Image (cartoon, rainbow over all chains, first blue to last red; front, side):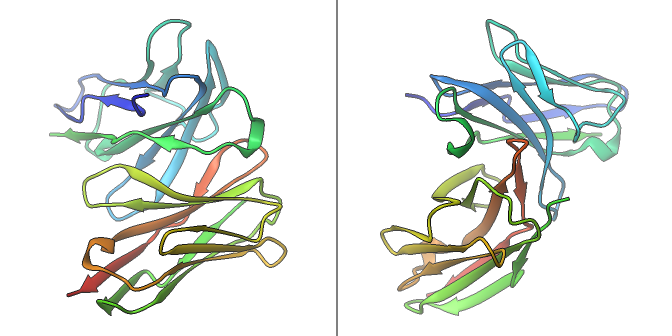
Length: 116
Length: 111
């Protein structure tokens, strides 16, 4: 059972371009979470999704950021018109479908976005 | 709003010492607490998960305790090794099924 897979591991974008970050959860996991880690800061929650549904997006910036978790395929975090302040490590986590609130979260290796 | 604090922010110890990392949280209405390890430029590795009904969990040289009523958890590392050098993060899961993270303790074990 492969772990949470994120790609790409490193992504460089020029200001104004779009960034697409992908996350494939562990097998049997239907809950996906995205977190952002700014340099020298802790991880901040962005969005929580289940298949085809956004459950909680209270941590997402209101503009330029969007996330989806389609019925088939990976979860996508999309950042439009990137700015230098978007440079960060973006982590995806997944947790099992069964087990409810007491389940453990497993994290991917992250995507390090650099905006130049 | 849940806030998680970790003290100290950084810690340096000689190899072989036992050490304790601290984590406190403001809202005791949590479902569980996880301790993670993060190596520089890497992802997070889950070390221990404590459910809200539990008092402690052990894995090898690691022991984590939870006092939910006082909003505190500790991670005890016995007989530290240079390979234990990393940033240690604690995170609490709330009713919204989100994890709230502390800013971490950066541990250096000196050979």
